[in-house]
Length: 180
Image (cartoon, rainbow, N blue to C red; front, side, top):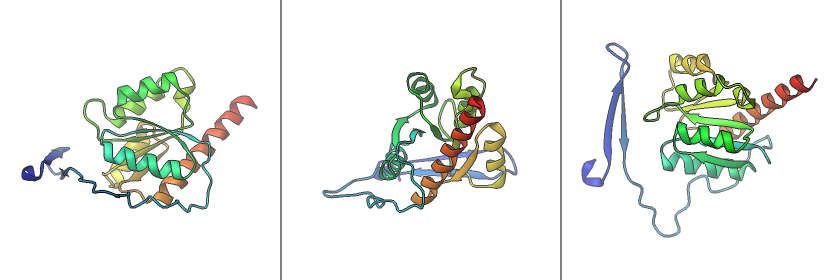
C-alpha cells in the first residue's frame, strides 16, 4: 500500500467490539476520466433548489456526494471538517446537513451534538449521517446523538437523493409547525 502512496489505518472501540481497517490509495485520473455516476441521477423525487451542506474529511467522497447531489438539482456547499461546517452554518442557511461520522478531531457525532445544542435555527436542521460503519449499533448511535437518518457508505445515488428529499420535507414540516 505504501509503495502506491497510500495508507492503512486501524481503529477499534475496544476488546470484543471488532476492528475497522481503512485502506486509502491515491486515485490517478487519466485523461477523459469521469466518475461512474456522471450520468444524470434518475430518482423518483426532485431536490432542485435544496441547499445541502456536505461534511466529509475525504476529498474524493465529498466530490462524489457533491456531483450526485448537483445532478439531482441541489445547491451544494461542502466542508472538510466539523469546524468548517460550523463556520458555514453561521454564514449560510442550508436546508439539509449530510455529515460523515468518522472524521479526525471533532467527529460527526460531536458535530451534530454541537449543532443540536445551539439556540438558533440550525439546532433543528434536518441531518443525515454518512458512515462506513453499517452495524445497527452504529445507526442507533447516530440517531441517538441527533441525526435524523443514517446512511451506510457506499450510498447509491438514488438512495442519497431520496434521503435528501426526506430530510428536506422534514425541514418544511418543522417550518410549518413554527409558523402555524
